[in-house]
Length: 388
Image 1 (tube, one colour):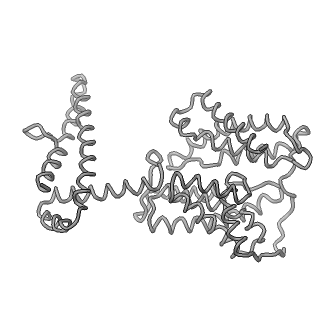
Image 2 (cartoon, one colour; image 1 turned 60 degrees about the vertical axis):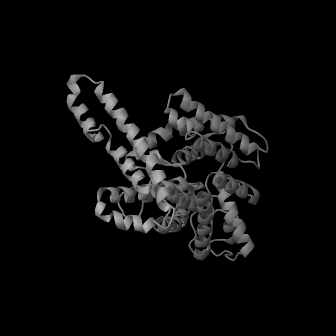
């Protein structure tokens, strides 16, 4: 309860900061200023020295408010840096804010957080128990999903997974599959079995694999990319674990951020993957539908523009209802495009004579015919006659 309340404090603080500073309305409505600040509150309450302070501490609550507000500012700052590369800042604002807080507490006598773990140099010849049972491994996969929100119980992981499934079944599958992949790679590399059972090697890989299916349309290529990214996330986590161990600092979701960024920046450089722009991103199911509609639309336009293939085209779909379904969908697309063209023509017609060249350009896009119908209308009428 204490951790959840601090998370709520962080969520409210970060969101109110966005409203107070007048940040983009679309970002605020999408809750993009809330998830980093929520994680700040959860992490700072989790890392608090509970062995010395079992209850609430005013200093920690104030720190949550301050650093959660700062995470919203960092979100805008990093967004400006990464958006030209078609990538959001992910959870980097959360990681930077909490790391700054943990380092600053070394000089704060009133905030007794202490080191999250015992600072020590890495031991390359250390020996520990690496065996794990099948049930413990599966439990670790579920816990890995819950560890995204610093919850280490199976029930918490199951609830988070169920919540993702309500929004996207593909997303939930990717989250669980990513956690299982990360746990398997960690097991193969010989990490302590207790760490795998606790989900410590599942949450970063879970985030990475899910991100791959958000930024790329689900396909075989996306599966290969997600698998490689998930494996590299575990290796990156082990590297950051060694790097931060002497300072007693946690790696949190830094491995996810560091590894996912280069894979997202790949957008547009390969023909095997269909990238999803940030402005069009929803859920993987919607991305698949859009690709399907566009594919059917291109097939339809190809037949319309090249009549010599019309006979083969109609023959191919004459024994099924696929053509009629496709035409209905394409008809909706053409209606929407036709409305857009009409709006362009009306807007351009109202402009002054000084912008006559722009008006001519917009008018040429509509491709009007002598009878006043547009190109899109002709396509619809043509195919409606053919399907009667």
